[in-house]
Length: 253
Image (tube, rainbow, N blue to C red; front, side):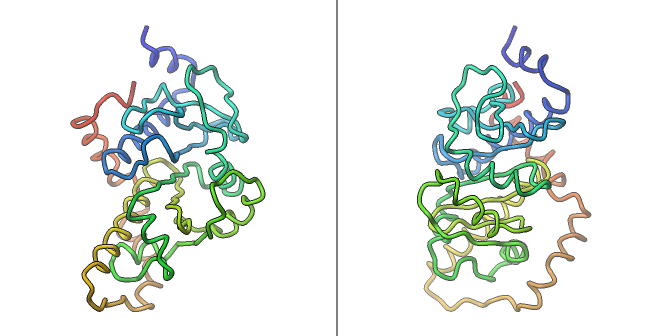
C-alpha cells in the first residue's frame, strides 16, 4: 500500500482535497521560483477541525511536497497525527498568529522571494506603478522587521499590521498572503510577486516612473470583484493544476 493510500484512508474527503491543493501550492511556488530551499511555509486550516492545520514537512523541498507528506499540527505547531516527517514549530509562529486572529484566513502563504525581499527593503515599499500593484495596494499592510520570527510577543503586532488585508509585506523579510483557499492565497501571491518584480525592473531602468493616480487605486477593489466574478483563485487554479500535471506530477500522492 502506498503512503498516500494510507493517509487518505485516515482523513475526511474534504481534508484530502485540501491536502492535494496545498501540496499543489507548494509545488507551484517552486515552479515559479519563489521558494527558499526548505524554508518558509504555507499552512491551511483543516476542515471540521478548526484548531488543526496542515504544513510542510521540515527539510523537504517545495517541489517534493505531496498530499500525504503534509503534517497535521495544532495551534502550537505540535503534531496531532502520526507522521514520519519532522516539523519546524518555530516556523509556525507567523502562521499560527494569523490563523488565530483571522477566521477567514484558512490558508496563509509566506515567501522569501528575491523580488519580494528586495522591495520589502525599500523605504517607500510597494509603489503604484503597475496594474498589479494597484490590486495589492488596495489591501496591503506592512510589518517592521523584528528578527527571525520566534518570539510570541511579536504576534499581536503582526496581526495588527495585517488587519483585514489580504497582503502583508514583512520589512526586510518577505511577503505574506492570506486566502480562503490555497488557490486564493496563491493567486494573491502571484500578483504580489509580479508587482515586486515589475518594481525592481522599473527602478533598475534609472528613469522617472509614472505613478498611477490615487483615485484609480481607491477604486480597484470593486473593479477586481467585477473582473474575477467573486471567484478569484478558482479562475486560474484548474489551469495551474494542469500545468503541474505536465511539469511536476505526483503532488496528489
